[in-house]
Image (cartoon, rainbow, N blue to C red; front, side, top):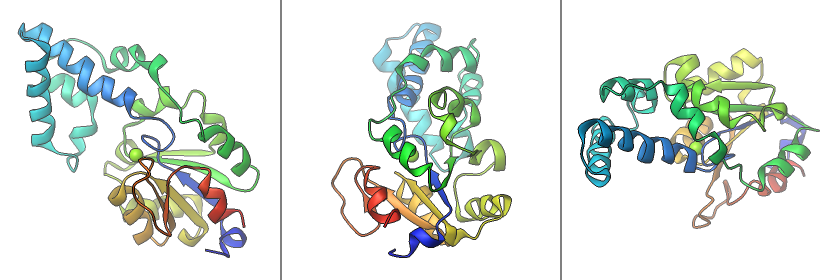
Length: 215
Ligand SMILES: [Mg+2]
């Protein structure tokens, strides 16, 4: 890792759990949707929440539809647009406190990009304060109709005309961020904000990127 600085050109970031906390997504999936269903079915919130969670779990995070709010609006027969839901909670979007200072510093030496699994419509409200730092944003679902996997990371390198070894990807999902980017030949860091995992390729906050990339 000592030589990263010489060859590293691009730093790639996941969004949810990495730059932005998960509360916004949770409000959409575990508050707004169950609330709308409770109203529609005239059942209590707790009952509705359980029903919704069961449906989410049945589909599972490896199914693309799991991430698609329009799919769920139609699946549950809700009369609301995805835009209305996503805009409603926009004020609750929280950027982790370490993000802006780290981006300010990294943008001087590297090209910064976003690689998110979520559809682009989820990305837009989260990027209002962040978009000025990023040259490119990729949504695995919207742009490639897939989840984040090694092929997608390779395609992104091809699009950006860069060798995977010149890219560092950072994210909080062991499989979709760390393993997939690593398999594509990228440098990868697993972000564990819960501070429980330690290791050479594990960081517990974004400030630690500088330790490994800025030598
Ligand atoms: Mg994430």
